[in-house]
Image (cartoon, rainbow, N blue to C red; front, top):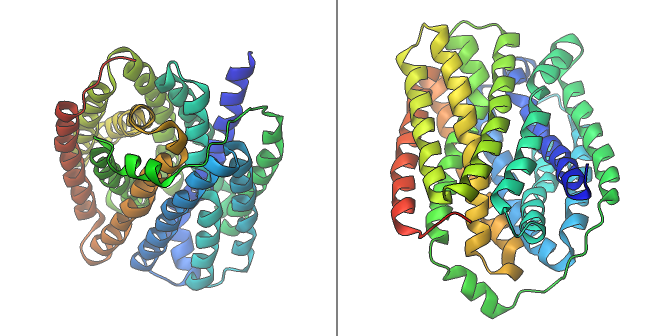
Length: 385
């Protein structure tokens, strides 16, 4: 294995654990709601605050990586994000639980803009493929997270699930010092910021990220509960379904990365959004059929995660090079920060109507995304890298 591949896989492990800290919640959501004596609406608000923090922190982490170096900021993010999981040992009500999620999200938020910026600077050729490998390694690493978290949570205690993945994050942060990277630190200027703001196409990608983040956060948090309550699946099967989504997501990352380099980024983005709409249509149109759930899991996983290397590659092509961290920070904020507002809406719909209605809401988001991807295809001039 050459050094570049090893570095990508190690960053992929860090990427996996960065997300795993938050993938513990969905399969254990019902248990935590009962244990803390709270509601889905309250947990939806906690999720919104968590992911808004997760996204907003990227606005700090991105510029910091431009000034201090991507690898240093990534290590701090992974390590301190994992350490904050200790707060859950003291969580006996929703307020302390929310504080733990907030602190964990704050530190973990620095990772994505730093890692994406680092990869874009190192892998100038075949950027989409490199993004796809990094993201796929992260996805495959997350595949077992929902099932492991559910097992630990129901066998011992849900708090132990958070601490377990937190400890793995701290250990991974320690091993990242094996990566040897020479970065040329070029502090951005005021003129550079103006150049970034005026960059054609970035505002379309910003809006796209808000909508795709809204869909992703909503499905990620409530899909296991949807399967349990609306489809009659057991808790372990619902957790396994989330894991299978991540498995197909890894395949989608590899496919999206290769396609974006070979057939064009905007064409690939359009294809992935067709897949998102189709997956939710199958889920809702076949409510009593196992095939509907199976097709959704495979198609949604591949499509939702397959768009990511395409968008990150587009951002690297459009952004000024010395503002790469800032660009990825802004885009991550739009997806994980602003997009997280959807979990409050979904939680409200679930409590006051049904999770079925909440997932029709998700279907509407997917249609809006498809329309926007057509606009991006028509407006952003793109060709294979």
